[in-house]
Every structure is written in C-alpha cells, then in structure tokens.
Amino acid sequence: MKLIPSEFFITSGKASSEVSELNAFDVALIKAGIGEQNLVAVSSVIPIGAKRIERTELDMGAVTHCVLSQMRGSEGEIISAGIAYAFRTDGKGGYVAEGHLHGSAKNLEVELRNKMTEMARIRKIELGEIHTCTEAMKIPLGCFGCCLASLVFTEYQ
Image 1: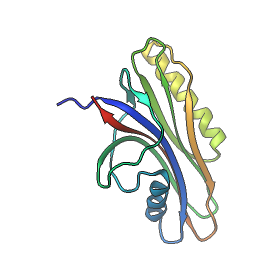
Image 2: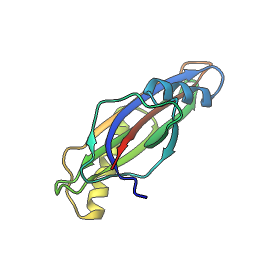
Image 3: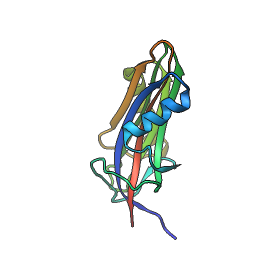
C-alpha cells in the first residue's frame, strides 16, 4: 500500500495552562486545528507534486500524518517552535525542517533557514523559496506553556 501525500497545510498554535505542560500542549493543538486527530509524526519529505492548501477541518479521530515541532516550558521562559519548508528547484518534491528552542521566534527562524540550507547542501540540490512558520511566547507566571507548528498531510494518491 502506498501512502503518498498530495496535499498539505501549515498550522501553528500556542497556549498556557496552570495545570501542566500536557494541558498547554493540548490547547495549542486545538488552537492549531489538529487537537481532535490522532497525530502520527513523519519525517521531512514533501512528495513530488504535493501542493499546499489552506488549513482545512479534519475528521475527528482521523489518523493524521504530520511533521510536528513543539516546545514546552514553565513560567517566565521564552519558548519557540517552528517549521520551514521549501521545494526543490528541479521539481522533485521538497523538504521540511522542524526546530524548537528557549528563545525568540527570530532566532528560531535563522536556525530553521540554516537547517534547510544544510539539507540542500547534503543532497547537492537547490531549493526554491524557504517558507517558515513559527510561534513564540513568554510563559505567564504560575503557568506552563507550549508552542507548536506543523505541516499536516491531508490527501493521498
């Protein structure tokens, strides 16, 4: 059986919780529109011909393949999570890099772009425009926090 994704969307969310990091993660998933799915983490290859679409609603309980970046933390910390993606200039698909850190979205974006550049160098290929999606937050006192970003596959050939 082949599962080759043909469409994907990009989403992100952030949240805090007074109860736990897990609850902050749960709310961040809900804000990102993927909190009612069974997420399956996949690595970082966008198949040939796959197209980005607008964020779409998914069926509750659907097994959903995604590249997911998340960062959790506690009160007073600045946290960031994000992804970057780009297509090869030769038309043979693309790649996704995920990252997270204690620090700003700006610092994370630099790291993500460096990761994409290195992925291209290792493969001896050229990438087109690098797109990024990041979330960052300073976690409020008395709370836990979570930032996340994801490339979510929705349709398959």
